[in-house]
Amino acid sequence: MTDGATEKDGVRIERRGQVLHVTLASPASRNAQTPATWRRLAAAANFVTPEVRVVVLSGEGASFSAGLDRRMLTVEGVEGEESLFTLAGYGPKRVDGFIRGAQAAFSWWSETSVITIAAVQGHAIGAGFQLALACDVVIAADDALFAMREASLGLVPDLTGTSRLVNRIGYSRALEICASGRFVEADEAVRIGLAIAKTPLAQLAERTEALVASFMTAPAAAVLELKSLLRAAEVNSPADQHKAERVAQITRLAALRAAMAG
Image (cartoon, rainbow, N blue to C red):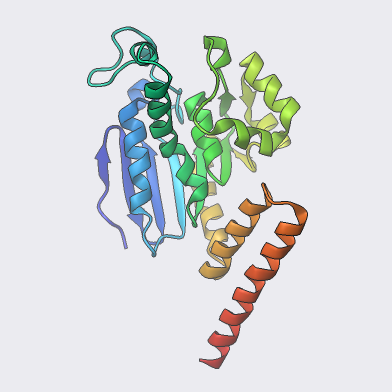
């Protein structure tokens, strides 16, 4: 089953069977992000219906996302939006609320019960890098270039990317990548754990589909439980995680028994 695609504010959303496709669709700007982009990405969470098992995030054109639309750092800003320059003049409370709202576009990708995959080609810079990191799994085309350039602009990453980056590659590597602002190519991204695989650009869609299919082999309820359990492992103490494993397994055994009895 394919639901009709809806496109708004440079983000296209379409469900194809059990897979929800979310596509950054402003290739002329290399999918640069604005507050409107973030509002639309946050709203994409509402499209994760019970039928959906996987969400695939991709970017149209040469780049996944070149990051924040640089106009947001000017006095003029983006039409219809307040620039970061203007927001900074309102004081901490106003800025905190703005950033909190923006973070909602990034946080749900890991918090949702279904698996989320970022298929990255070309540039994934700043907000683009953080958006890829928000997903459970990143697969990189051979031309992928990841960079966290916020410090180079006198800022810091603030779209949920810092803890995710440290969890994946460790503090020292995360510090070096963020402080230097350098590009991480696909080979290195796989080697240090940012991405699970590299693939030729021409095969990125095909490889992503194969990855999606592999996630469909196990029963949906078990995979949902598994994702929750593994996410908890990032923050739980060993004792708490051991308990979480027991609780999850009790649930799964009861479900298996019920299925066999039925």
